[in-house]
Length: 286
Image (tube, rainbow, N blue to C red; front, side, top):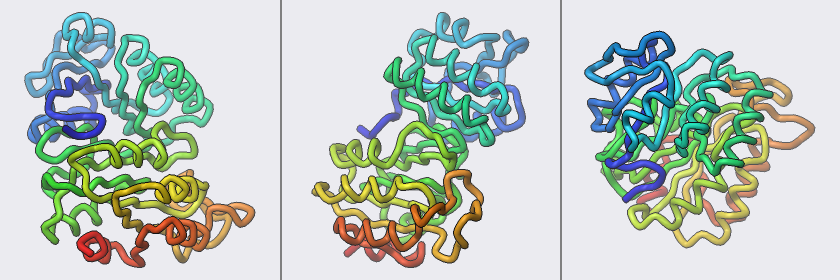
């Protein structure tokens, strides 16, 4: 049992014949993910790592009726069509790895996802992984191990570092979710935290945030009522206001979304806030 995906999840890869799709399909298969089909228009009938390729999502779904999740490795201009096609075909979990998806396209995707009750992870995400069960994403296979720490993050690289530190300290993970670094994303902290709170396999939660937006402040409101302990780390303590720090969502404007305001909100909610990534495992153990 884990949140969103487990070893029974049947995964479709959109853009499977591209360089990224091909490489990460192999990694996912090696991790134990059940990748049952791929889609690249015009490449139907081919195989990638013994996974059959179809021209459309509908063709894949009609052949493999148990597909219930899709991961998208498609250039940004075509992401909206790919996501819409997956949702129209009845797939209710969609992970969008691609970055630089146009803002209006992201808004259209989220509006349709709401209508169809689809879980969208991303865009501009590293994906989701339940160690020992399944992964849909681009995170390195070797740094995770099964355990009881749930991790939800806006930043990919930082979450890898923290997951590696947890693993090195003997603390495995239940599920790790990458929300994505864009202005408009699907799942938020306030969506994932309740899932981890109710997940019997999760005993404690690590939240990896960054400057910009108010996602962490909103998360703090929910953390106040959580029974499970929460440890947080916020990136961007030295970022100058008005400058975008790597992620489109990581920008401080008009005094909102500052490092100090986020840390204060989380502290007030009862979370323990680490000042450096490698302090996280110690705080979790405490």
